[in-house]
Image 1 (spheres, rainbow, N blue to C red):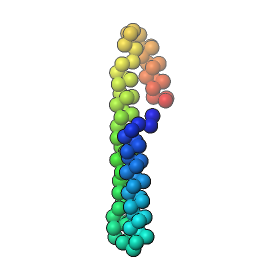
Image 2: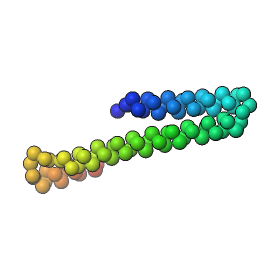
Image 3: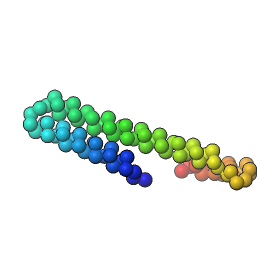
Image 4: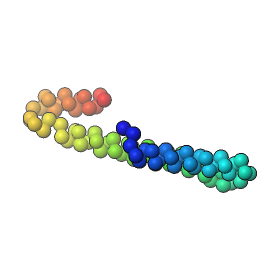
Length: 85
């Protein structure tokens, strides 16, 4: 579940936080605040794309459900299992 893109986003968050702390310790408060604003923005960006990927997976699972048989009861059970998980 942890992909390479997740690692890059986590590294971007850590780097921007470290740069913000560096600016704050050196007395550059405006630069520190500007850089600190990046942290939640990058985090939300990562969460959005993670949810977008998960919704695509769920949608494809619903479309490919019971393709081997046309049993309506089987399809209904699989859809209920997907909604419960």
